[in-house]
Length: 380
Image 1 (spheres, one colour):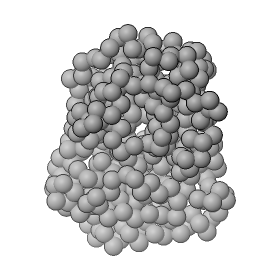
Image 2 (cartoon, rainbow, N blue to C red):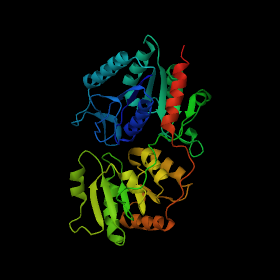
Image 3 (tube, rainbow, N blue to C red):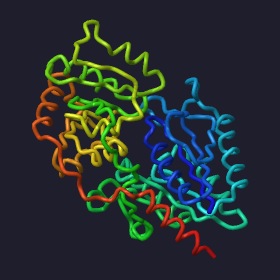
Image 4 (cartoon, helix red, strand yellow):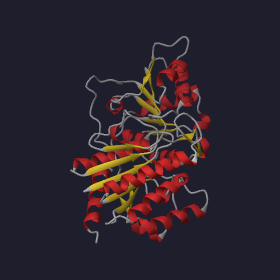
């Protein structure tokens, strides 16, 4: 079976990471997978087994998702965006896939509607139409206007066979963040969470007994890291390890490192063995993106969540609140974030100790493959 996945991440790397996990699951079953990535290149992410087509990249202007920038910071003009559209159209025609998956669209990426709609219309004109699926996480950014939900419904009804919701409904259903119409409900397929296998112990027990502070692989998280630097000086009996991501991690580390750096503070670039380190951590401090939440659920350390909410973002806050129904999760709103508040939250989380791992489904990638294959085989 031939599969094409289209994804554009604009700020963090979670959307691309999840799409790659999905693509590797198809490839593991012997499928031929092309992943079209429209965000900034993230070479540290695992694309093994896939054909990766990198479009001329776009990124948001910070948290302003209405302004899309080229890699050098210039505003992306029509010519630049038209090249992206043509590359995707050509790739789709050449691949002629059995399955086409759009990540997030039409529930998000509305500022890229022109290129996604061209992709969908091109799929309709192929000699044999692919099964078209949408891939979404557990929590979406709620529509700011009813018209946005209505438009998403129209696109789903016209083009999509199903919507893959990468969640376990025992924990979170789509209704928590999105108005679900009768039409949409009929197309929802809950897959379980899309996660790599649960991390095992770190061979060197790296991270053991430490406060691990992370903010994903993107450029966000500076306020969290600054508060952690201050908090480390207030909790000297714990080692604090800050894992800094982003394109210029070394510069960010230099900016964050205090002149008189305490001995219990370590600052280093984000590490590929982070998930294994979590299994030994005294406390995890992080934001609450989809992939981070799954890492915490699988690894089991007590956690302080500081949901990202800049630019009126509410997705992470909704996810964090849903996790507080489980033991060992503590939420510190970003409006209250400073060194003393973080120090208190870490001490409180530390007192709870590690928690049992919940009996939720984390095989969402494999389930997505099974659903896609069933639908593809049933095509006329």
